[in-house]
Image 1 (cartoon, helix red, strand yellow):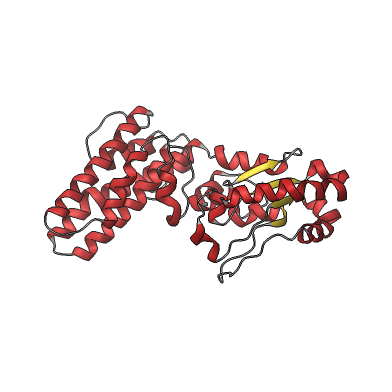
Image 2: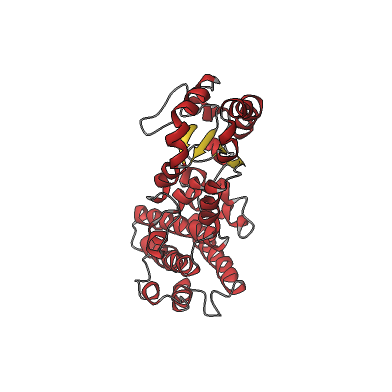
Length: 307
């Protein structure tokens, strides 16, 4: 059973009654679910996931005011439920379950108590942080405070910020994959050629998530999440092959063709979404066109590779 399903069952069987019996005045103010750090929050956990930083439990999110009133008592009541503990914890691991202030949960990912309030904040946030802040499931939130921030993080990125991030990924795809990969091979720099492919795959991956208006998880779950996307999910396999396929001779030529195929597919979506309007095969010119149509002057004036 997935960790998300275990957590939901644990809440339904024990947590729901605990809240109702001990905190009836706050029952409609406590948001409950499971989200944040950990493979189980993405629904990607398996048997191997349970060897560290994994514990059965759920999150109870409180406003700052409610935390001051009942936070300690609620945490004690939650611990008394006997939630499972992690068998081992990495140095960077921390428990993501139990009682948390809403502001603390989001501050970990956005640097503030809620959603970004300026385009500069949106521009600075890495995709993996937004992915972790919005994964998992929320089972109840009558107050709506937790879910309102979550909804903004999921769907509230300003379009000009998305376009700027997209332009930066497109130009990196052009330079690393369409241009420098073959040139590095021509120079006899096979290691540099592989680094160029790595840069290309990284940029292409985030480009695909941006075209889907989705936040990309960090590298461990990138391809798994990409397979479930609505647009360009079929690019997952060729992108994986660029990293894992054999090198040398005809394999290098095959990878160069795959780079062009991936770029052609991305270019097709740019045209379909009205982000670009023609142009050639080289993605650099499409990157500049995407940036030219950014409405906010300060964002449009940024260097093409920023974002």
